[in-house]
Length: 107
Image 1 (tube, rainbow, N blue to C red):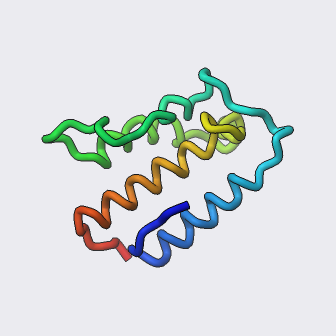
Image 2: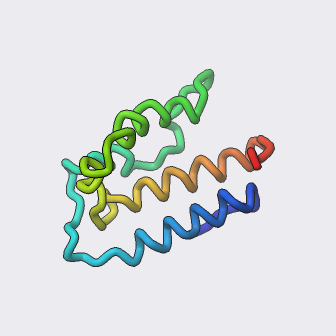
């Protein structure tokens, strides 16, 4: 995982999330094309229009997906490139973009 310097708390949390996701056992299930996070499986670069706010582009669909009771979120916990690791990669992309744009870290 390549995470740039930035908010130390955010970097540490992202690193821990990534490590935990990579340690998930295969027997919890492998995400396929129908997994809700599979929609984020592509390269996020170029998904945002020139005059669009990058965070808002991804925030709306993530809020719809993630703002559910814990019991409903359990189905997101699957391994594979179309599973929970996609969320890690998207958050890494957003963190790298934040540093690249020289946005001051929120902490």
